[in-house]
Each structure stands twice: as structure tokens, then as C-alpha cells.
Image 1 (spheres, rainbow, N blue to C red):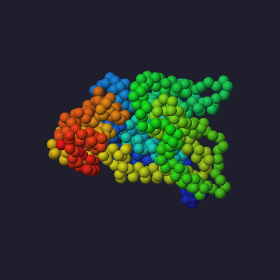
Image 2 (image 1 turned 90 degrees about the horizontal axis):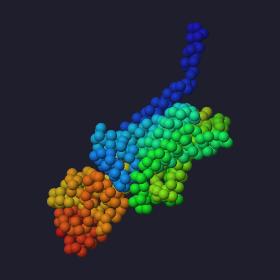
Image 3 (image 1 turned 60 degrees about the horizontal axis):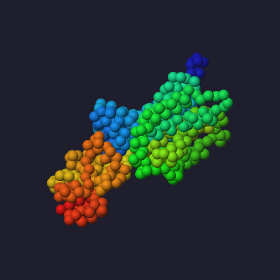
Image 4 (image 1 turned 45 degrees about the vertical axis):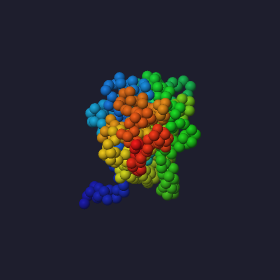
Length: 502
């Protein structure tokens, strides 16, 4: 045996761990596997859920005959969203149809693309393992929910992640990067009005790094222009909705709601943080881990994304009166990047710590997703889908009883039942004596000018009482019908109350 052969054999036998490139390949493969898992499960969940109220507005806008009608509908407060997402869905539905899977597929794809962009961004600034950590953290946020909903939040997240990637991976003075950054933020504003706030962390970052004689970067200037131009152009559409609904909007700002934003963005965050702290204490080497004292610019920028909900609270208090955690989904990429950079800075030499953190977050996220896969009916905002299913079970019996009209008092249930009913032309919504009494009813009245919806008042019910089935009537309606000389009969007491009047 030659000396060279012996050395090679000893090297092969005694190699204690994979080479750094091998570990990077494993982390990259794991990121791809997680992305594939969330794509497949999101599509499966999308196929096993009914539409709910907000999604049905997206579907009805996509069915409008032309873009002029869509624009006019938005100008008359028929939906809260700007036209960007409606345009996307218009193209998607014309290509793939109006099924639940078709309309929710863009959200699933956008979520996966955003996850991989954040992974790549964090990997470039740290290493592949900590890039995977950023992705795993996002899987424990509210993001997966919007991967199987036909609403703009996953695309909002994707564009925020793309803007962050452009900012952190290109030169400060790059003109092309500045244009791409501004366009990305501008497109995000066409998806959701609150995307204007995405420029806040970048402006704060440059303010903190400012010194005399230093001008704002081309990217920041382009970003400001990028959010201002569509905000001004689409302002009349947003103001039309605000003028009618801001005072009565159900999710108004308060200090309590502000405190709840971050727990809602990361529903199990405090519990997972406690487990991570315990793991760090157990896995930290006795001599301590090497730590870089230098805070990366990217980490500082990422932590400044925490200011987006604070800025949103100020905007809601001053003008919009609308404050929900999902409006700030654009903050997630920055927070995930900052967390990955922070872990890498403090524990880069203690691989066991970051590996354990990745395992904890990835397993927790996949377990939550699998629970939804097993019970997709559990995703039920305000109990609407359950109520819709319960009504649909009774529809055949109501039809057999010879009822020509189905009247709903609940405006949320009305829109869903009308979409899934076998006889949508027989479904009506009851309005109050002076018109719609709730914002959800009023917005349907606005939409009815552009999309077929039917309404009754009490006089219409009196005229057709014997031919009508009333779904979940309130006590005031029952009393009004008694005073008019009609005798109420409960045909089905549950799961959804159905009442006839003789």
C-alpha cells in the first residue's frame, strides 16, 4: 500500500461531518422540500374549502364584462381592494375557470415564491442553514393561511419579499435596481392600499445611516415615487369606499388591537420563543459561541420592518379606521431576515443551536399545516362556511315544499348561499325599511349595479309570504310578520332555522 493510498483511506474513514458545501446543499434541498410541501397542501386545502364572503367579491369582479365596469364598480365602493389583484384574477379565471382551486392557485404560487426569495436573501447574507431558518419562521406565521385564499395577501407578501431582495443584493447607487425596486413597491400598492407602508423601513434605515452630505439613495427615491404614484392614481377608489364605510368598519384601531398585531402575525410566537430560549441554554457550548459584534445593515433594516404595523396604526387613527394584522403581511420578509441574521451573528459557530431552531420551527409549521389538511372545514371565518353547508343540506327539502323564494336576513350567509345554490335566481337578501342596515349588506347593494344580486324589503315578503322560506329570521322580523297577520311556522329548527309564514 502506497503512502498516498493510506492517506486517502484515513481521510475517508475519519471525516467527521459533511463539507460546508454539502451542508448548504442539504439546507437548499430542505427549503425546496418545504416549499413543495406547502404548495401541495395549499392546493389540497383550497380544493376542500367553500368560498367565503370576501372571496366571493373577488370572483364577482373577475366575472364582470370589461375593465371599465370593474373600475366603475370600485369607484362606487363595491370592494375594499385596489384593482391590481382583480386584474390578476380576471386573467387567471379566464384561463383556468372560476373553481376554488383556480382562483386560489395564484396565492399558493405567490406564497411559495416569496418563501424561496426570503430563503435566498437570508442565505446570501448568512448561510444556507440560516436561510432555511428564515423560511421556517415564516411557516409559523399567518402567511400559510393566505396561501389557500383567493385574496391579495400572498401576492402582497411576494412583492414585499422581492423588494427586500432587490434592496439587499444590489448596489446602493444602481439605477436599474432603483427602477426595479420602485416598480415592485408600486405594483404592491395596486394589490393593497396598505402596501404604501412598505417604504417605511427603508426610509428609517437611511435616516439612521444618514450623515452630513449623504443624499438619499436612488432606490429610496424610486421607492417613494413607486408608492406615491399608484396611491395618488388609485386614491379616488380608496376614498370612495372610505367615505361610505370607514366609520362603521368593524376592525377599527385601538391600543388593544395594536398590542395584538404581533401575536396574530405569529400566533404561537411566544411559545416558540420560549422553546428556542430553552434549546439555546441546553445546546450552547460551555465555552460559549463565537459572536460577531457587527450588526449587518440587512439585519437592522429587517428589524425596522416591525415599524410597519406602528405606522399602520397611525394611518388608521388619522384616516382609514381600518386596522387588521393581515394588512401588514408585508412586514414578514424583513422580520424573518432579521431573525436569521441575528441567529447567525450570535450562534454561527454553534451549529446545533441553529439546526435545532430550524427543526423546531419547520416541524411546528408543517404540523399546523397538516392539521388543516386533515380538517379543511376548520378554516371557517365567522362560521360562514359551516352555515352555508348546513343551508345547502336543506335546500332540496325547501324546494320540495314548493317555495319559490329563499330570503336571507344574514347578509354574509346570503352571498355564499346564492353562489352555491342550485337556484341562485330565487335567493334574496332582506333589507331594512330605509335600506341596508349593515356594511356587508350595503356593499352588496353597491355591487348589485354591476353583478346580479336581488333584494327585498318587508313589503315584498308580505306580498309573497306563502311562497317564501326565510332563513334564520331575527325576532323583530317574526314579530313584524305576526302583526301583519301571518302565522310563523318553523320548518327546520336546526342546523339552520328555516321559517315559513302562512
